[in-house]
Image 1 (spheres, rainbow, N blue to C red):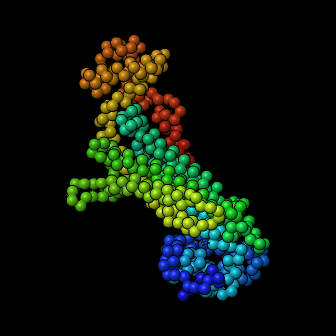
Image 2: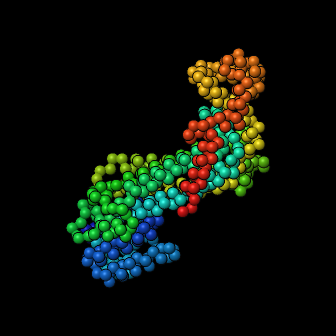
Image 3: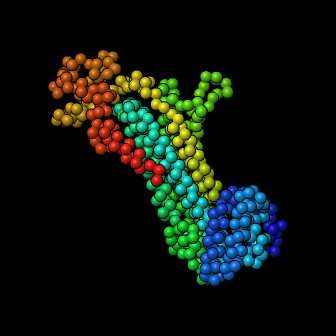
Length: 461
Ligand code: ARG
């Protein structure tokens, strides 16, 4: 049996059930690369300040690199007795180097070590998610370009509201994902402070140089309070919240596209390659990818909840509860990364069914608000104009007219003296869209500007 690195004060072997209960190697082995990266930086610092010799440092660095290669090649043996990734790597080093290996843990505790490893892992994860968000934004901008001429009914309460240009619709999601990316950047900045050197909770009596380690690992600074370091998982919570926002955005979009791909909507054509069939109903073609993106959001929200409840009520400094942070963190990152990848595939493959959408654009009085604003622009108070157009819509319904433009001129003139033949210039969805002008609206020139701006912003750098 491998002896425990903390075995000195113990007179008994650890109960097997305790080992099984307390181990984290089954999931924290994923941290091995970051653990080794941090250990190399730590060893180099120890040599820099004279706590180990340069020769010892070289041996340690070589040993750690070999261990990394072994793990990568799947030739490394993981055993329950060695509990977690930190103890595995260190024990393997001691197996190789003896006393030199026994020096690596100088001025370090697993508490600051695990905080550092997880930070490094999360930081890489944030960068990967950021890149995936950009890919998805590019796919959305591309879809906006492909559907430049399409007019869509915009909805509120899932009821037809006002017409919008399809590019305006796609760019709405580009904006949401831009905020998501900003959140990642912001989280990364706050995260990017080195924990290592806090040791167990109080720091160390040894003359370490934490700035040296920070620089080697790409941290912007050094955490100021060692007790804070041992207990701090804010960065994990914030990151998983950021991921939850992304998942929420994806989920709403997926729901919308599930609806849009129904016979009832018929707004969307999805290629066979991204749909699945039914084992019993031969005619079926189902949008399972979209449904799973919507469904997997539950996992991410679950991960955030797990972390929130985990941290709640923990006294300073390190508590073993914190070991439970890893699985929800890993799962949230894995899930959102996969969802983002597939979302980009779906967006790239989907086509709006412009003909089917156009056939029904006359339904729902999408131009009613534009007509109301036509009156307002002539000095009619908004509340009065609202009422006048409301009556006209009601008249259409009584007379069985689908469109306001189908009402006889007389009805317009009777409804309000300002509703002369000029109304024809704003009625109909095409006219209604052209009539928009405010900043950020679906006005064609506004949308073109936004599209051009996003194309530039998303150019590969
Ligand atoms: N596996 C542990 C974790 O993930 C590492 C830190 C253990 N520290 C300790 N004092 N037992 O939190």
